Image (cartoon, rainbow, N blue to C red; front, side, top):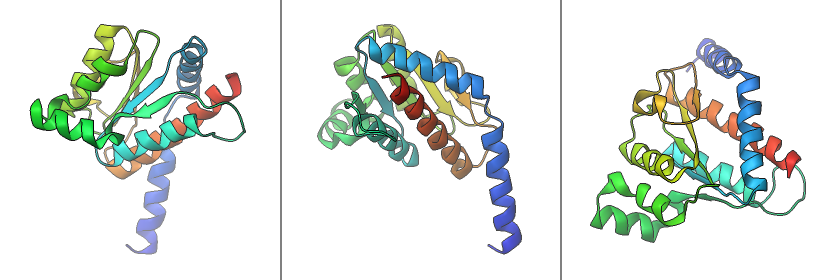
Length: 185
C-alpha cells in the first residue's frame, strides 16, 4: 500500500464515520441506558472481527469506559466456547447464538447483533429469538444491511462496503454508546 492508498483509506473511513447520524446514536444509547437502569443486561454477538467487537464492547460495560463506576452486566455470546461448540455440534452453527439468547435473555435486555454483511444466519436467528422474547434489538451492519436490515429497533447501517471500514465504525459507535450509558448510570 503506497501513501496515496493510505490517504484514501483514511478518507474513506472518515466519510463512513461521518455518515452516521449523531441523533440516532444518542437515542440508541439513551434507550440502552434506560433498559439497564431497569435491570436489563447487554448481550452481544458476531462472527470473526464482529465477535471481537462484541467482546470489546461488552468489556467496556463490565470493566469501565472512561470513569470508575459499578460494573454493568454485558456478555459476548461467543466467549463461552464450551456452549458455542456444544450447540454447534448438537444443533448446528446457525443456532449457536439463538440457543444462548433463549437461555440468557429476558424482556428488559438489549441484544446487539453485529454482521458487516447483515446475512450471518446465526445472528439472524438470535435476533429473531430476541424479538420473540421482547428484547430491545439493535443491528450493526454495512451499507445494505442484508437480511438483518429490518429486524431491529435500531439498525446502524455503515455507508460503506469494505468490511474493515464497517468494523471501525461499529467499534466507534460502540465506544460512544459506552460513554452515553456510563454517564447515565
